Image 1: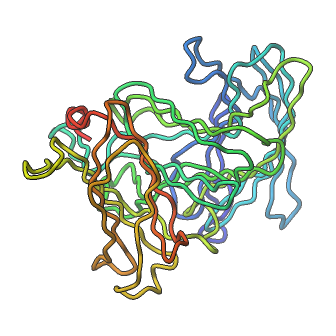
Image 2 (image 1 turned 180 degrees about the vertical axis):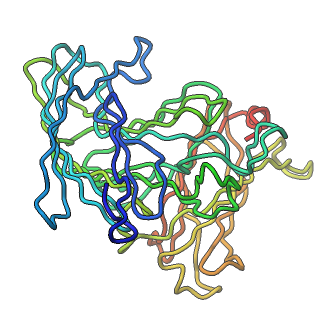
Length: 380
């Protein structure tokens, strides 16, 4: 415990919850998304293995010290490991500095480093039926990635019909995490769960990650009592006996995923619908109307007539139209596009805002069914 909000009033900052789960908060927040020590074979047909911290050693802080150190022994059928955690509480972000040394007992098919897990049941336009009175139910709104080349990608979370695995190139990744960007009570209207006060969880690799990819695993969810979102770094080199692995990273729990210094405009919200194409068009059939709202960054200083354009990456779709328009909300611009998939295979869309050839926003990324009628059946 630590007095985050008021001197002399200690609050719980960090909790270890069994297995290798732990979670934390900054000031005026409630517990939400988790971090894990490791993920083993998650999402594989063979089944997931759950490593656990078997023993802890706590180092008593000196009087007035703002950090606390603890050590932990991890054990599982496939590996063993030693961890060092240094907790640094903060008003805006509480950070845990993690060092780990792992040894394999047998080869691990899928090793997940620095996992973060959360819950996404439904958003404001995705209520399963009228029996659900809350407008939205989720602890995290999206996956944010700070790429090795300095770019930022934001991927909204979904509650899928079946298990879904999305991968992201992550050589030299600078940071990643599951973030909560909806911080107003009216979004959720739940005075008990307080989803708007749940922290963003952000991982900053320091050593031992190297080449690899990010795996985002999403599971179908029928209530908000379980977590169904998991992201972790999967190293390219196999983890097996005789090849120990050492790593270091920071994981922060707080009001923002990372420092906002130099951060580009960010995705504020996404609205997706379906439109028919008129008979007078050379094309026919339904198409997706995608509206992505961006806010902050350089948008705050731009005039309404600034030459902001859409930067839409190549995808197996027909881009029938697109536009960028300033909205009445201060420093918010909307990228709107009408796109039609070219096949029935799922399509990944990536788009951002640019001025004179330079991107000024995060890249929004999402995957949509190639069959538009399938999207309508999902009610999403």
